[in-house]
Image (cartoon, rainbow, N blue to C red; front, side, top):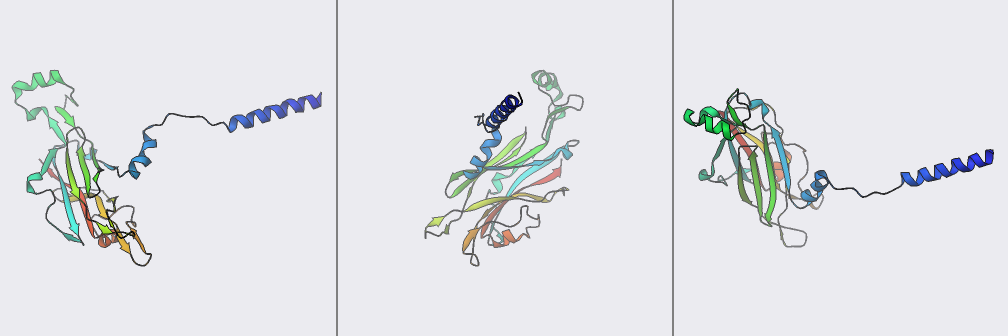
Length: 231
């Protein structure tokens, strides 16, 4: 009887072992696509601006270009100034249209007369061509600035021109109204003679005063940011 019991127990253990090693196919979710998108040159960084909710602010997206550490002409040009508001109010419209606007909806907060509110900014990148990168600066629920940025080539290991760029977010904290706030850098790799390689590595987050060693070494980079002012 005892021998029979041990046979049953051994069979249960063996069966459990098979189940524990079973492989099952699952449906991919959005997080599974992120490494693939990153490898293809897509990336996005998000920033919480909910601390601005109680008042209306102007948010001007800005892009600054540097060559060998020197600020050059605005790559977007003066005509490309893009100023948005963090929220739209019912009072922005003539009172005779209020009833129609409310009926059309949706309204974020009717009691506070807030039609639309943005609590997040995203800065995204996508490949456009070897020598171009598309950037998209989005004020959630409000609007976006989308432009194509030109990249500069270097002579790579194979002796041919290559475009090697990567991204780094900046450290963020308290906003200084009226001051340029850097959000993300798009920077070119540089050749490191000591290790005989091209690289764009160092800090995980860059200091907002642009003092990071990565930026001082990069021959060409863009700084994408914003200027917030009280309306």
